[in-house]
Amino acid sequence: MPTSIQVAALAVNVGLALAQTTVTVNVGSLLQQIDGFGVSQAFGRASQFQNLTDGPRTQGLDYLFSTTTGAGLTIIRNRIGSGGAGDSILPTSPGSPTATPSYVWDGVDAGQVWFSQAAMSYGVKTIYADAWSAPGFMKTNGDQGNGGYLCGVTGETCASGDWRQAYANFLVQYVKYYQQTGIPITHLGFLNEPDLVTSYSSMQSDASQAASFIPTLYNTLASNSLSSVKITCCDAVGWSDQKTLTTGLVSAGMEQYLGVFTGHMYGGDPTTPLATSLKSWQSEGADLNDAWCTTWYSSGGLCEGLTWANKISTGIISANLSAYIYWQGVEVNQFQASSYLVASDGTTVTPSGRLWAFAMWSRFIRPGAYRVSTSGTVSSVAIGAFKNTDGTVVVVFTNTGSSAQSVTLSFTGFTPSSAAAYLTDNTHTVASTTATLSGGSVTVSVPAYAVLTVKLSGTATTTTTT
Image (cartoon, rainbow, N blue to C red; front, top):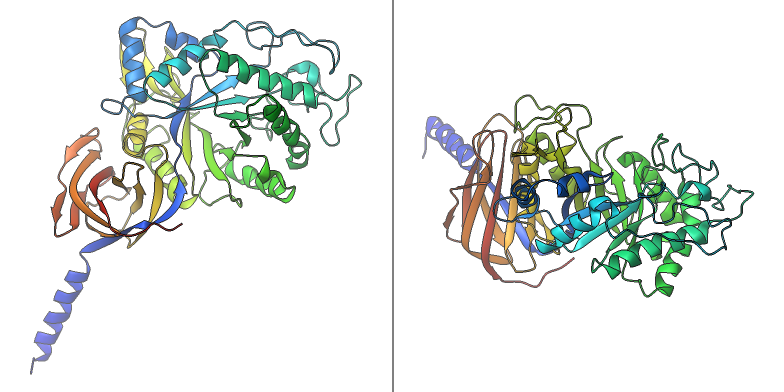
């Protein structure tokens, strides 16, 4: 019979054994589909990027889109201009909503045509075109900036008439110009931050007003053989505002017309899902406060890479996001800001820690992947698991704590045959690190203040469920 001391020692040993953290990945249990991760080059940034000399321009593109030396981004977000000549495809009013518009297309679109083509050369297939505003002559305030509403939406009338169909025609013509250039726009938005009035391009809308336009846009796309283009709404400033808009639009029956609900993080990060059966994207986020920094982790500041790694992780895992998009990709001589991922002085090109935060997701989790369920928790570590279309499984660990954590991965519905791990922290940048495969399980050590991504090949052993 064991003594009381032996029993106590046994209890301690059992406790130590239980402390060895195991996380189980259920590869057959599918959650949301992933569309990808991306950036914009709106408001002329694409043109500035294009005007760099060959070396820096190629290096910048590699940092954004390469799956071997960069972030492997897979979405770009272009702006549909609404201003005068050189910005909008309809710089001058036709005189009335039913008059024939005189569209103007320069084939450049302030560099966004080049940027789209360049992204496509790296395999990017998701191109989101979004309008910040309708042209001023279509709005209640007669100005493409300073808010105002689209003439004809619920509660808003104009002496010039109802411009909803004309606005839909305008948006569809933009899509057709890109199509003619060999660039298929996959997603189309008609609002940007409708809950914010700015001096630059901006247009206000609530859910009922958006609902009074969405069917018109949907039908106009269909009548132009563009039904494959997914309509988005509404790119609100913050997630709580987007929740309000989403609830109103779902109640109004708009899910049948829409493809994706889109919101920003400036007024609050996405931490819980939107109440919809459609996909959700965080379609614009950035550090708008700090000067340029390349830091991975120092104090948890907004410009730091780990901060954005955690935002991405929370959005994908807790808010069920299908995409996460930073504001700008590459900027030239804008060192007063961190609202972009890669900086250039015109000669050299420098990536930020924020870029590498995106790389730890986008380089390994490719479009069409599904998030899969996991069980088990690790102190201060967020865990997301995914199944790619090629059958590989990816697990991303985001450790915001001050201690390293040892984790053993086990699998349901999948038998791994190989495992590779990659680490980003203050001294490593997507660097190969140890992953030990033994008996169908994989053991890794996740350092403090780090992201570790494990990619596994193997064999599926069960049928997937959703």
